[in-house]
Image (spheres, rainbow, N blue to C red):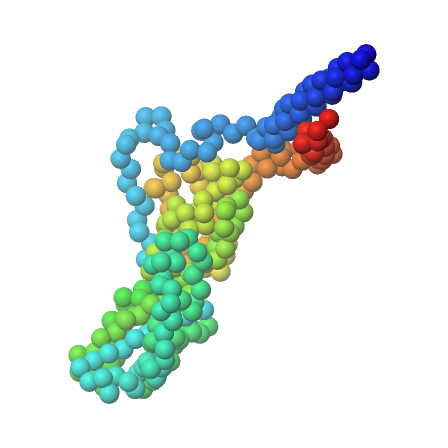
Amino acid sequence: MRQCHSDGVTKIYIKYSMKKNLYLGIFLFQAIILSLTSCVSQKEIAYFQKGVNQSDTITIAKAYIPKIQPGDILSVNIGSLNPAASSFFNPYSTMPVNTETTDATSMANGTPLSPSLTQSASPDYLVDASGSIELPLLGNIKLEGFTTTEARDLIKDRLKTYLKEPTVNVRVMNYKISVMGEVAKPSVYVIPNEKITLPEALSLSGDITIFGRRDNVLIIRDIDGKKEFGRINLNNREVYASEYYYLHNNDIVYVEPGKGRSAQSDRIYQILPVILSALSLLSIIVVYSHVKI
């Protein structure tokens, strides 16, 4: 009788100890998770905050109009009242076009756009080192420094010798920007409409992570064969008036990691053994909690 009573007390004590250890393990695990979370203030992550004595209305920077440069790939589509005559200037017009994924859909989903998705039925021409392209019958045409609208008008004027009421469409097919650093989806993005702002580029890349510095975003830009480095503070709404608000062709957007990223990495290495021990303890407690005593 005494032995049975002793066994009952032992079982109750073991169950109590296991329950206590389970709560202890859960508490320890939660404490570890919380220790990995960096303390980031609201002001450090909020975009476009209003500054002192700042108006609610800001004049946006002048829209950037890209100009054709050597290395650009131009799509030139030519038409007229006589399709047969126009076909001489569009030797690849019968090529099939990939329509499975549209540019608009790709941009809405925030996915990188490849040149194949933005290809039209018109031929593409690489602007050579001298800033020129060569068109059928028209020969060599220098377009460096022209906007696509100016290039269109120039080509249309030359075509009047061969075509009646010609129409011309000129697009830059390799207009692209790069987004890298502390963003969700770093990549190179092809921009089909040749116009994109910094907030739009960051949205395409899935936004800045919680560890990225919003107050010191770096823009790297090619200007006359030199690299220009500019800084943008996205915490302040003055970004809309900045010369870096509109991105240029081949711009690089780099988001630096904040102190929280390096601090988190250090803490992970420091408490990794504790995490493993806590997980082992939890697994043992869970297994034994299902064993009938």
